[in-house]
Image (cartoon, rainbow, N blue to C red):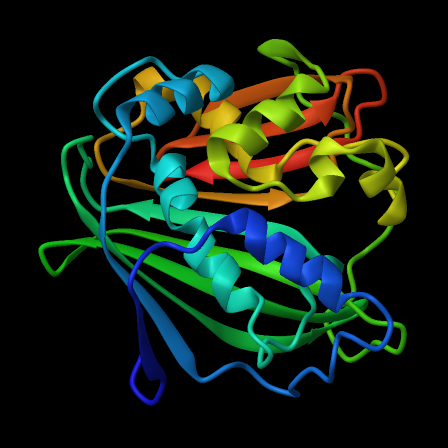
Length: 288
């Protein structure tokens, strides 16, 4: 992290205001020019605490048991406004309104309890070409008493008209979907309920008009809700420390029915979501 300017924020930003800022910046003549590289800055917020009622609401929306131990994905929720603040800086090379969340990995070093106070750090790295534009990683780190207890890395794709130079994804028939161990009906309320408990009010998840403006026929589920729902299904079989990686293949349209599958591996679990009717892959993940 050396070489980055350290910026300490007094409090966690409000995600709603950041989305409004991003939408205004997308209007013609208001967006300004994006920098060619990554912002050489690291944002920090100290003294973040957990609201028990909000945690319980999150647990219900995502399918976790009500408990004082934080799900690994809830730490993403706690720190996400800091990452969002980074992504709305003028130096950030990809406009927030055009970004696609394509992958996420989380490492939980030890259990985090509801009464603990966290410090969060956020920075961007690994800007690289992709066949459809450019990708980068946003790193979010949660620490307690100076010790890193949690790390999340979100990979984002910024689509660009004149793209090339990156790894090209093979296109072909979808592999046969594995046998489902569960099916979940995902209603439109998943979009609005997750926005409420996470603070992530991106309109592609909560508004039919917002979804259509960005090329979706109807609202889509948050990718981090899908990841959390899969982890909740494996909750009783997760160790106290682990890494969970997912790639988001295709959006989960609201409403729809998804098929969840999981299989034990020597080091943990492989899991996936598929469209229950078409078999198209929507998420692939592993826990180790």
